[in-house]
Length: 188
Image 1 (cartoon, rainbow, N blue to C red):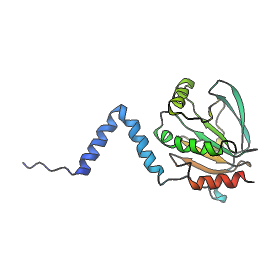
Image 2 (image 1 turned 120 degrees about the vertical axis):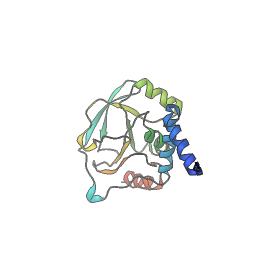
Image 3 (image 1 turned 135 degrees about the horizontal axis):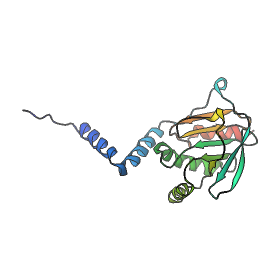
Image 4 (image 1 turned 180 degrees about the vertical axis):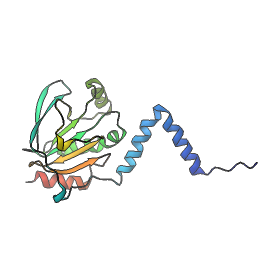
């Protein structure tokens, strides 16, 4: 009986499957795969006739320090709104690009990153990764126009409530394309 020879690609595929079965290696591999996707995937701008609108409202939230506040959405300031979690590999993959965008636009754009997780877990995560993003915990039902069943889901909403970008899944938020959109929105 002749044993078939395995090709290098077969061996790599088997090794990847085995690594995905090991809990400690699963998340890093999934994050790496999502980062590779982000090399070619940037958020797309909604066509004018396809743009949904959110009725301006105040998002009731609690911050990492336990303070309650209301953040205006769809009025006064352009908003970058993100639904994410620390256990979500696509979220982890895109957070560095969101941090870079926040570093440059945090004073011009209202960044609101929302999670339903335990405060201490999120705080440990943010400290470990050295992220300086405005993290909030929603204290109200998500408005219908922003409901989505998967994370990450991110929005760029203009000052009139138009959803300019809606992206589900990991994307490069620090791309030239996104920066041009923000530059145009904050300039008028």
